[in-house]
Image (cartoon, rainbow, N blue to C red):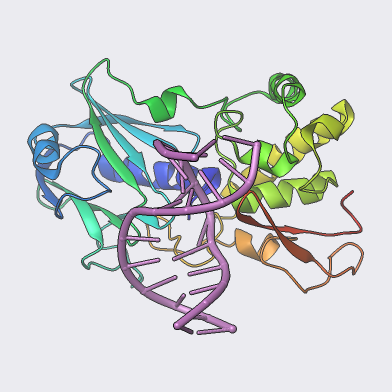
Length: 278
DNA sequence: CTGTCCCTGATT
DNA sequence: AATCAGGGACAG
């Protein structure tokens, strides 16, 4: 489900519910693929902890505790983090809620729901990291434009793979997923299947700009809700209404009227305009 | 570097 | 019944 914009929004909206609040009770489901740290260990460690900061790196979230320990979170495809008792009715409390943090009276609980269980939760004792984070390339928005341009250019010289596959590689660039890769390539006017080696330096700069613009714009509009994403207050995003190619197979390009095509690249569904992108 | 798999549900 | 889904690890 979530790419960088959705994770960033989740982070910002969770802050008021988490920061400075002591965890008084922890709810979990049974051990599964979802728990990198077992539910019982998680409970033991989280009890009495207090989040002092939330960090986002790519699509990952880290809750920094006052103790110096950290909670590592990833939303996978269908993960949802949300605050209990939001005004709307979209949040569900069902068998798919795998982790719940409770706080002292009057303070709403925070739920982590994930239908497909591709999401992850792990307890990181002070000083310990996770290889998934260590391997990440620079974050698509935490990195300044010209520095990111240079990095992507250098990285693109080292191999010859479809540019879309390159964008999706989190060890190259952290945060872009299937939607925003397609959208960024549209705005930069590059075909998703084009080899990295055939993308000029100028085009790589345009792509860097397009990627950062698309991500920032999505955050501004509340992220993309295709099916599962809801923000911590339960609202859908609105950025899906601005998509130019993603999910628009068979519809006309908004620039040139050509019919948008859908192909498969690296096992992922890929959308582009055959006229605007070459 | 591509394919396969993890898991569940909605849609065709 | 088959296909598809905002992700990513791992095998070959």
